[in-house]
Image (cartoon, rainbow, N blue to C red):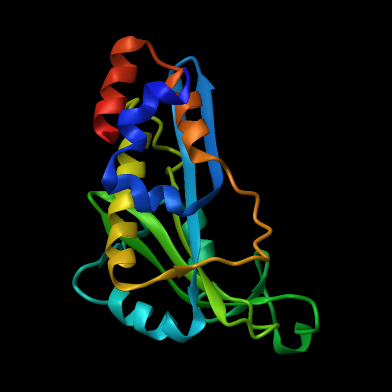
Length: 211
């Protein structure tokens, strides 16, 4: 399946901002029960001077957050413990562990509930180098015991992540970062690859969801 078969998806104006953001994590599984996408993560950069305004906006009634730990992947609980902590990779650093090695400060982290789905919403900043920008991430990660998903579930998640991004992009300008070393995924090619997993009828349904 070439890009031309996905034109109705890629020309959907509601998804434009989604495709402007960067994907660095897209995980999937395939077994006797079928094909499923288990993780999606998108990110972008915002000026550090705008972070307080962004956090204030994220705390308005336009966004709802999930407090029930049983409703989202347990790995989120570990990451939620990083709020306002200095971290390097997954480790929370003590003051005496801070050095000229790069580390980040987590400025905001909550589990966003949007359209009956839970996404980890995180903002963090390269504090060790006092960078003038911060990184914002939105992550979907299925619960480990939630394998009875509809085959089109991942398409809905992409669409709903796009809705969250559209809210943010209406208020804030994302910026380009030349030193971005994250492993970026071409999500358009990935979507085409996913669609090959289905027969015509199922493929057609997913294209309609994203179009």
